[in-house]
Length: 206
Ligand SMILES: NC(=O)c1ccc[n+]([C@@H]2O[C@H](COP(=O)([O-])OP(=O)(O)OC[C@H]3O[C@@H](n4cnc5c(N)ncnc54)[C@H](O)[C@@H]3O)[C@@H](O)[C@H]2O)c1
Image 1 (tube, rainbow, N blue to C red):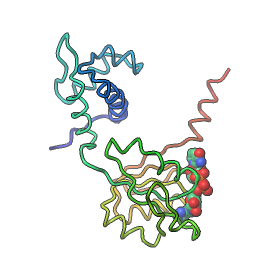
Image 2: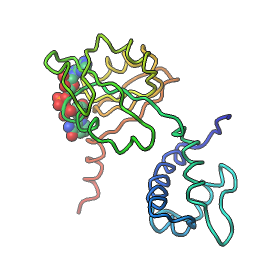
Image 3: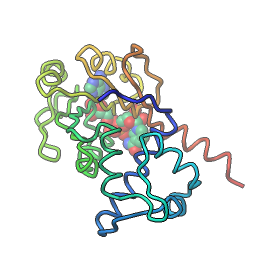
Image 4: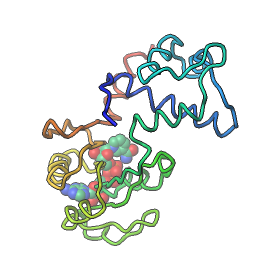
């Protein structure tokens, strides 16, 4: 299937639709209107219809969208219809929390390997994964066909970890360290920047 080029804003909304649709599916709700989606997700229904029409006409006038069909379509578009192996570097406070958080498993994202540079962390068990030394990173990533890397090391170490991920062939990185990492253009990076989010939120305080 050829990948359709869709805007980043839409790509960022699709997981939000997916999460709510999964909740509906769990409750055996079969159809949903763009109005209901809009109210629940605090989005404009016209925007939702436009987003979903991007991928072909899924909605039926007066009935709405078939929940399970929409889930399947969004998962295909986000490429969550196949398991995506993920590796994490930095088995500290945040890294451990992310490894213990299994909610993304149902979305086919699976942390398959955890690495750390500190001797005393090697071999430690986190959620059934043994922390591995950085010396094994390339081999493990290639063997497990890891496609996404997560960085949870201190900022001063983040760039070199990113370089290791790139060398080993990961295609995308989620960086939690407060540093803008540089990677070749074919590698996609998202920064989960807790500090700047919090700082910009401060502006809205009275
Ligand atoms: N803890 C949080 O709530 C939180 C929230 C948002 C962002 N962050 C950011 O996430 C990162 C990790 O935070 P933390 O609180 O988990 O720190 P931490 O000190 O608990 O853990 C960092 C881990 O990275 C490992 N490490 C250091 N250098 C490494 C290297 N070169 N290669 C491999 N492993 C290396 C350390 O041994 C340690 O286990 C930091 O950049 C922090 O700013 C943390």
